Image 1 (spheres, rainbow, N blue to C red):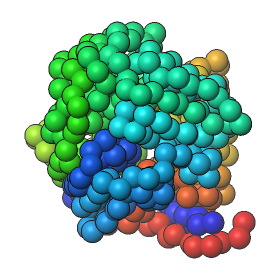
Image 2: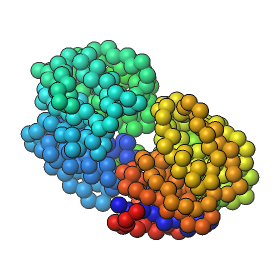
Image 3: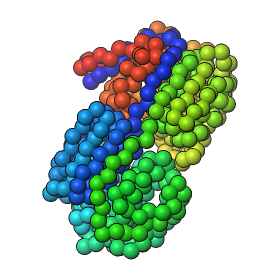
Image 4: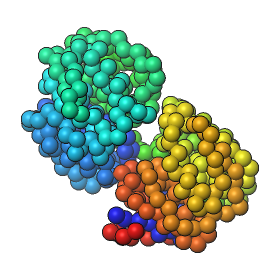
Amino acid sequence: MDKFIIHGGNALSGKIQVSGAKNATLALMPAALLASGTSKLLNTPRLNDVHTMIKLISHLGAECSFEGDELTINASNISQFEAPYEAVKKMRASIYVLGPLLARFGEAKVSLPGGCAWGPRPVDLHIQSMKRLGAQIEIENGYIIAKAKRLKGATISFDRSTVGATGNLLMAAVLAKGTTIINNASMEPEITNLIEFLNMMGAKIFGINSSILEIEGVDELTGAQIDTIPDRIEAATLLTAAVMTKGIITLDNCSSIHLLSPIAKLEDAGAVLSIQKNSVSIDASQIDLQSVDVATSPFPGFPTDMQAQWISLMSVTPGVSTITDTIYLDRFSHVPELNRLGANITIKENSAIVRGVAKLNGTKVMSTDLRASASLVLAGLVATGLTEVLRVYHLDRGYEGLEKKLNSLGANIERVTGSEY
């Protein structure tokens, strides 16, 4: 397993290009299965999760080629309808194949995700949505077994906004007979990107960028080409790194409209930002950091995927701040590791109370998940001495060459491959 060795203390400076969005790509790829033909996804990031999804849809019979940032998917010869546990256990987004397989072929067998399938990130809304469209579903030996001659439109109201279930339901409803209404649909940019792609393929989805979506089912779709949106979480992570190191950086291929809440919070913390349509510049070289409370919420609110990084920033900010996660109530595995670096963070229910410290001290810390890994890397950038971040394979799931990008901005991060801990 790889690890990072970080020599802290360098201010970031320079310009970097943001990669395509992981969460958008992982929805667009299964959507390509809906059409007998070829689709092209541009601005696709080279991430472990993307390669995992390629393996899964290739197992189903899709032909994939990945050149540069262009991913080509030919779904003409799909012959398998099962997403095995070996694929799904590595990536919960694998459940996205449920809707497309069921809609186009009338059957799907998808493993329940690893871990607690009915816990903080349940799949019950995916299953209930397919049932509402007329699918017969059974759970056998850890698999969702779904069948339907043809799905039928229905009105479905989510009790809570859910990105995953909204995406899966959209992909199923576009080939269903009749009209489907989704109330309280997710308005995340990744869902908007998916809707744009589906409509390019011939779907009829109305209400884009709103919480009420109307889908008129069509008989078939054709392949299409789309640009994957920039990764707003990568962008916000890099901007936060600049603030922590008192740096000056510019992000290109960056959609500022997707970053309104993180940008507002960074400005509240004292940073100076310059916003263009496709770029964002930040100057934190002369700021006196101010503590800022955050509560995560669905888009356009502050993203839960930035909660860990914000805690890292607040750990070296004077004063006391409270970071509350309203999306996932137990997403604080990074806190004990940050405390090992000298942070002063306590957890109370679904909130972290952060008392800023004058400095962090480098030591060995363990990554536990994707965004926790990013928070530890950010902490290492400002810690005194040497910080070792173990198990960075978590990081590779969602950040394309993060250490290379940070090093190009002046950081000092070494990746050690195959190290023994």
